[in-house]
Length: 309
Image 1 (cartoon, rainbow, N blue to C red):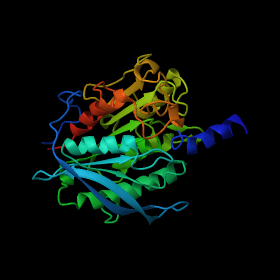
Image 2: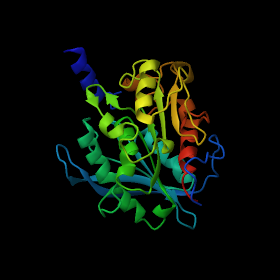
Image 3: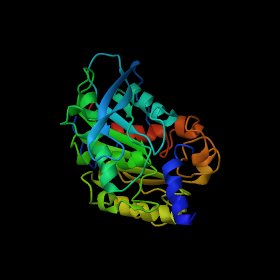
Image 4: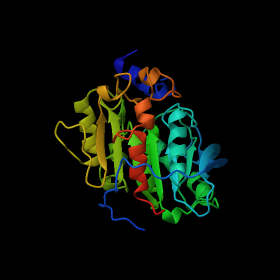
């Protein structure tokens, strides 16, 4: 098997085995943890893009949590990486944390078993985020009694799911911001610059926050290559720095090996150990509970800053 083909095969399977705000207004405190609210779980379905199809023609599951307190709330959607289970530990942690912050929050299944180019991945994003289509995931969530999508929709995801989150605003302008882990413009042989590059999508880079590992085997595999991809994705260059966050918290971060528990900040740095070969249901303790800018809570607080309570 050639190195190029080996990398392609790895990309397909690794993650499974393995008030209206000014756009430039920074969040009050990216390390804040909002006052938790009591939540309850729910499930639903939507019609997504089927395997080998360009149409929204297949039923997929939605798993979510929402506040039990009175009122209506903004919406958060999380999309998993290639081959992952849509209710894995990182998805569930993000959904639970956003629900406790006062969101109707959900992780959605999609045809995540394969990775492809812009047309295929954008098709998946279209079926999830086209709010004007009653069968989309976003429409299903916005229709919930507790949801008020006029208060804002925010998206987050990992790997292929990060690409989907970054493209979400293409299909509904209510998507205010996106956070991507393992986000980029080039995955192995798949060049996504035409749809993901800075200026080539409707979401401005001032509403995008990207967090990648320094030894990401698909985006990197070294920090210099990661920086190059982030420049293409966001238009932001910060020399040899590992942080290029802007005044409003958008921009990019590189997670270093020394910041994660197993000393290996690869594509799946949020996993406790084993890189992308480790369990998707065992999380790096710092990522899950810490307050540093690359960790879960800070990124969710940043997304929250673009919505109305």
